[in-house]
Amino acid sequence: MPPIRLLSPRLANQIAAGEVVERPASVVKELVENALDAGANRVDVEVEQGGVKLIRVRDDGSGIEEDDLPLALSRHATSKIASLDDLEAVASLGFRGEALASISSVSRLTLTSRTESQEAASRVEVEGREMDARISPAAHPVGTTVEVRDLFFNTPARRKFLRTEKTEFNHVEECVRRQALSRFDAGFTLRHNQRVVQSLRPAESALDRERRIGSLCGQQFIDNAVVIDAEATGLRLWGWVALPTFSRSQADLQYFFVNGRVIRDRLVAHAVRQAYRDVLYNNRHPAFVLYLEVDPATVDVNVHPTKHEVRFRDGRLVHDFIFRTLHKALADVRPDDHFRGAVAQSFGREAVTQGQEAVPATGASAEAGWNGQPSVSNYGYPGGSGAGFGGQSQPQQEWRASDQMAFYQSLNAGGGSDGQQAMPASDRAATPMPTPPADSDQEPPLGYAIAQLHGIYILAQGRAGLIVVDMHAAHERITYERMKRALAEQDLKSQPLLVPLSLAVSQKEAALTESHGEELQKLGLQIERIGPETLAVRQVPALLRGADTEQLVRDVLADLIEHGQSDRVEAVTHELLGTMACHGSVRANRQLTIPEMNSLLRDMEATERSGQCNHGRPTWTLVTMSELDKLFLRGR
Image (tube, rainbow, N blue to C red; front, side, top):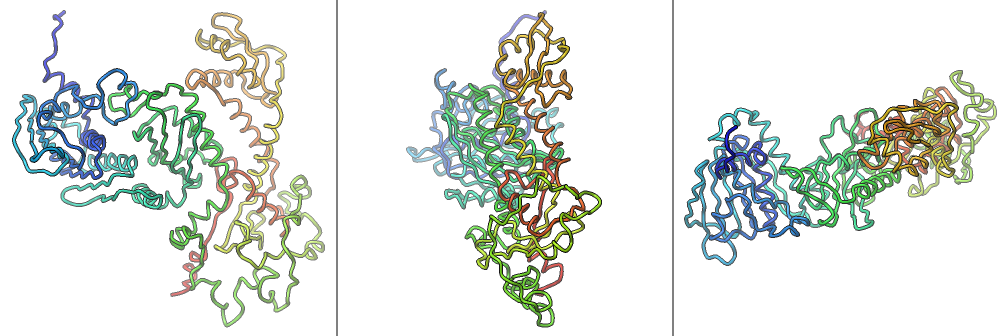
């Protein structure tokens, strides 16, 4: 075996570069983070040929003293930490002192900097493996400019692994996007091949922040997002989470920051998935831009070479806080929140910001009907402002919440696929339809029912346009939420197994059942350790007596090992309740009266997560007046 030798500085830098410099985007990330740590208010990034030919990052930060320039390019040289205590409470983005040394070992690097106390700037140049720093005077304002040319020119094997220019630039653009999302107080400019791609001013106000989010993540995201801001036990979570209806086919719009550092963490991902569990359609992904602020001493950022992962001192506390905050925010979403996005896209964001959901003057509601007849809204809902259909005046009837019908318990009685009505036709004809109040400000978000389509959809008229409701999906969510509340009000009952189930597990899993015995008991599971690697399941939740007990127990133990807790029983229980709610909800071809339809709409407005059914399908949609006008070429 060869003798052990101390690696040369050149070879050590090459190895470190393999961890830090993966592609041009890695260089941009490290240099932009250094600029932000220097207190920059403006960061300009310029790249050529996807960053392979040139990467130039310029900032107006504090700069570097002339005597420190050669040291800045040495390994493990940094101004951000000085002791172990500093490392255990890192507040800066960079702290290892490896980035510049690693970058300079695989490129031609030039660093020009000037501090406020200096009369002139200084430049240091390093080229590849020799690492001989050459210092010369230069002209430069206060701040720093780093130029990286011919990346991987001296390591051709690694250069072969780079992708096309377009792909590499996409990674650079994504890197700048993340940094711009992390620091609203700084301005950013990105140029590629002399063309400006992004130009972002500092965003100090809430409106400016939303504009930056819209510019970087798309205006549709901000139009369909809910703003959250919560604090508890020394933690603060704020940002934007998209409505479940704005889900994605892939996880490409998920940004999570811890103390300003973008991370990808399994604990965070699990908490978010839990919060969105029963409101997302199959295999869809939520969209969010979230910021977690914690005491730097309670989070370890020195666990991964790229610093994309962190380790929390109390991971369970952080997980529960994120889950509870997002779960409550999504539960509090009401139709009004959905309307903001739909109306913003139709009428412009300013109208929504000012609280005005105005219909364009060319819309149908602003004109008389064809051939001078009253507009459709006059006789589309009996008792409206004009004469009813056929010229007969309809009696006015005040709409009161007390007029809602408690019909859910017997909703399917006499109904179903045969299309049988809820009451005799003569009684239905004689039942007056409630009139919406004259003041449109009192109109509920989902408006008032005007008809039923093919026994499946409820058509409702609102001031924003036509609202189409899938009555089965809507009633399914209402029933499901009521069943969950009823279950939460009583303890989860257990049922003893006639013959205890014996399971062969690992010693770690067996020990886990002993240390988490009380927690398992709260879940309705009584599990005893009867051997070093053997468990006996004696009781299971009564609601889940028909479920696969062995798989349920193994899933619970897997969750306890990975996350320190398990919601598997709750998930399976809710899945069962969802199935029961689906079978117990109103079926297709069930003919409802107008009061029944309005009662369903009012319950939707008061029910958590009513925008989606238990399977994640939308329960209603809005067709705005402007969209209807386009269909009929009105206003042209």
